[in-house]
Length: 273
Image (cartoon, rainbow, N blue to C red; front, side):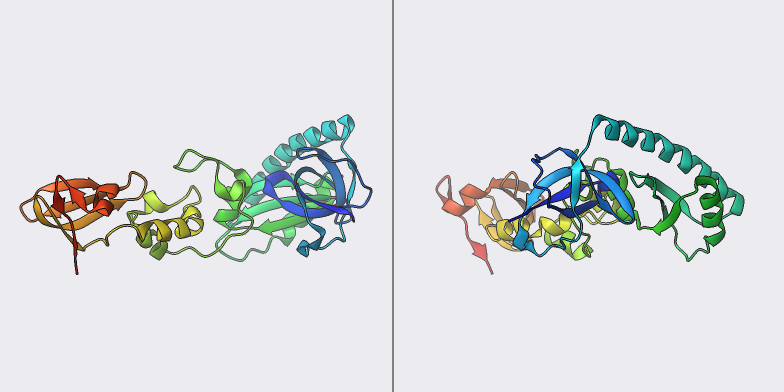
């Protein structure tokens, strides 16, 4: 049974490739793989299962050599140069597009320019001019702002690397309803990622919040404490505390374990419907 590996490329592109040559591969190894009309170079991310339903038409050709690594670095330099040239030509033509990134296929058979634009653009003239300069296949690829963040990477407000640039495979629709369900503020700057769109974690953390919030009284429900009857104003699933506001302006913070036990200094707590 042949092995299949997930290979990661520049800009966080990923793909699955067949190890038809039975190469001894480990996570982190650099390899050469079959690409469209040529070869590309990436890094082994993980081993996959043959039965996972991936297309096996592409394969891993060999492990990268020191010469391959040197060529990859040369490509990075060529990409920086190409970006500057393309940007100047975009400005000369006054095209309504923002150049995001440039990527050479490892063998140089293709040069991809990634851009963002809010409208359709006729960039045929730009492509012809770039092709005359680089003598290779030119591809202009329009992407969204979330794709831009994925390609460029960075850190979120949590201080960790962006989810889209690390483990998320695909983007899914995200709505403010997810933020409401997690009792988060709806201030855009607080629930938006570096891309300016709603944070991806709102979606994949939803189940955690749904499960945890079942342990707490509802926001707006009433609880009687030794200070009287108050309204649940806030719950914090991380510190396991419930904030209760009373009519006389008193605000108290109670630990969830105390509420679950039903006692606090001999007084009972109950939820009023």
